[in-house]
Image 1: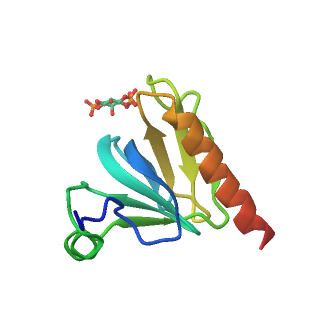
Image 2 (image 1 turned 60 degrees about the horizontal axis):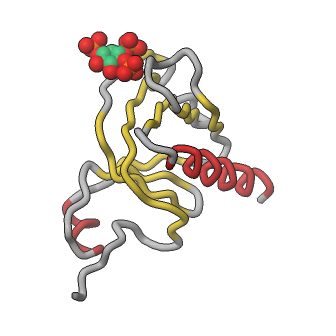
Image 3 (image 1 turned 30 degrees about the vertical axis):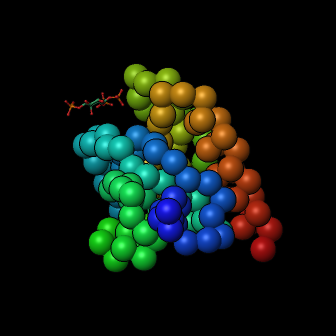
Length: 125
Ligand code: I3S
């Protein structure tokens, strides 16, 4: 069809929908605001796009600037007491910003492994 089915620049490690909320920014606790994001795991960062349409890569990049989260020095762990939801991940950046990531299905385990793998890889560089 000529349409690009991926929303991210390569090298792309993983992409898909996740529910996401930022809970801490600059040391300040934020009110939760869960939203669905198209998430791309790249070499050294996670990118959150507001939506994913049947678009070419170029037009998506132009029309939606993603929120970009640096993974170097970040931590990923299973969040225990941060949500009533099951299978929630907490991502903490080196600057101390905290995000919760969630999805309804088992994919969350793949996300955990993929993000952890990337963080560990960056730590060795
Ligand atoms: O940790 P909290 O504050 O109980 O999180 C819930 C609230 O943010 C709630 O919003 P309001 O209190 O603004 O109405 C959300 O609707 C819930 O989804 C939050 O809890 P979960 O357990 O889904 O993370």
